[in-house]
Length: 282
Image (cartoon, rainbow, N blue to C red; front, side, top):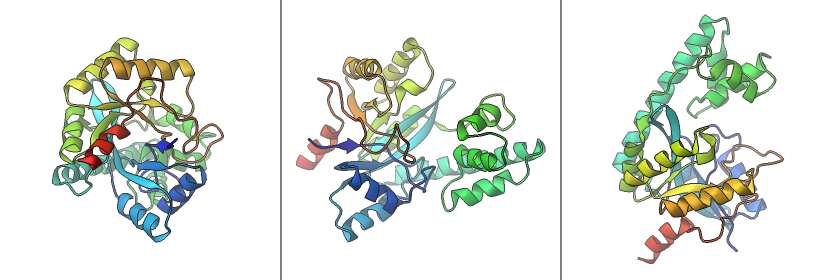
């Protein structure tokens, strides 16, 4: 059986493993097909393809991206898989997203400095390296300052809504992301739908509007997940005629979350890989 992990991150966004480290770990964990889906950037894709070829890894890479979007009061992430990373429409959208991400990071830094937390922006920028600065980098910088024990604590105390470091996002709308992914020849997927802290009524509304806008799939399976949740999401994928995807949303190794771990789809779900398999046969 082919092992798919279709949601992962590198140091080109907020992952902690380099491209090489991620690919080697995927191979060690028996992953056959891996998608790299960094936040609002495809910068890892070419280095990943090069590394796989040069090291003859037995691993199929799917070119991907995770685009942040605004839908009502929610920040919804849309994963694009099997995309042409050079398509002008996708490139232009990601450039816009990156500019918004940078502006948001600068404003977060200003607000933290104003409240007495100096040097956090500069440290977050160091931690990000060549990647875009994310809130995870700010969180790591604040943990270093000893203001909280872990990243989750920082988000709760500083970066959540109505906290001193919170800056509202200005992401594109969901339809814009779907259109860019489609133009680039890819399949669009609602990422981790159970994480948005919305009622089932709102979740159904999201999936309905996503589908109406041309969305094609939703994530159903993740490593740390109750069987009942996985079954429910599988039922929703069938109800809204969406392909089902599976992915670890891997950022770094954890005891309960790793590449390829506990990833399988409920019975009767249509795997999203059928999308690019069909295109390869054409």
